[in-house]
Length: 292
Image (cartoon, rainbow, N blue to C red):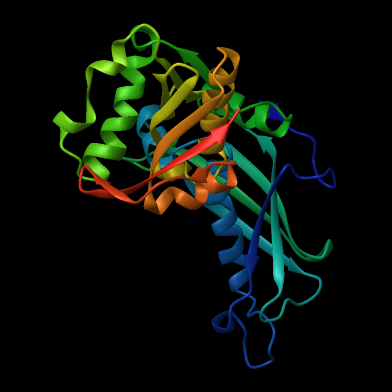
């Protein structure tokens, strides 16, 4: 059995939503049933905050999580265009149950409170089974403020198997880049530094690599984050780890070839465009650089 301290302790997890016109009723306030939908959106984002690709993780654990009970208490109303924060905290893990308490807040004021009780079960029979220790430890660790993933730097011999699995899923399966264009001899060169993020289940989530482009110039490439974990900050941390590795070995500049769809991401990380747009593997790219 595992007990986690209950609210009103601050919740580590919070997800922001904007109230849409379709969610208000004839009284011009949010229709009561939508608060359950807000909590449902939040629980999906909670698993993402735990660096847990939900479907792949449940398959690995050979179980799934089913809602058993949901209660909502209304304190004040949200209205169209309000920015609301939905917080969740796991307050108890039993043998097969998980109990969450949550709030819907506007500017820190509680509008709604709720309780969600889930049961961990065998997906084939939908009969309850014990919450796996790995999942229990992950949730307890997250609620205690612990990191939910780590980033390792190393060579291809150490990180290549997991890094290639992420790249295969992102570049080959998702983006349709031919395998022969994705893999090259540079991966295994001894001076190449690979970065890999793994969660507490040992699942590979994101990767990137750092080449020696020229004396004093590093080149970052093969940046990939699994689709369920995009937008969580993983990509930024992989990128910064490689930038710092480049600076540590004495490079004065680091460059990369950004897909045009990711140019804004790299701008926010301090990279500047240079030269004309070009096509690589059938996708528009822009060279970008950052002075170290």
